[in-house]
Image (tube, rainbow, N blue to C red):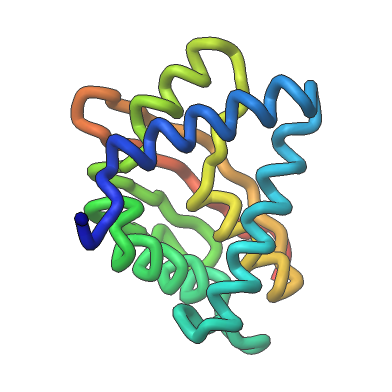
Length: 153
């Protein structure tokens, strides 16, 4: 028996769950996935897998979440390139759910945006809101790039 879950299996799970959520929660999938991010963060904090403290700077919290997800193999590498204290580009390499996310987007359905929603949950804990824009996506290279801007702090 394997000691880990293969990324291809996780990708199929992601597609199946996201597809079902989209089918059952027509138009409400985004809010559902945001809530999943909050529950995930709550459980990761409870287990001591990541730390978010009330005085944390928003970008520091985002970096901590990124490194946490990277350390568990959700992605091979995550780079957060700070533009300043309120803006950054986030690059994700070797995303385990690339094929399912691309397929869902092609079907005009909402993907889980798992990392994004855990990050939004961390910012919510800090009383911060952010704006996110997708910048680039390369399915073959399993590479995504997002632009984040902190709106309140």
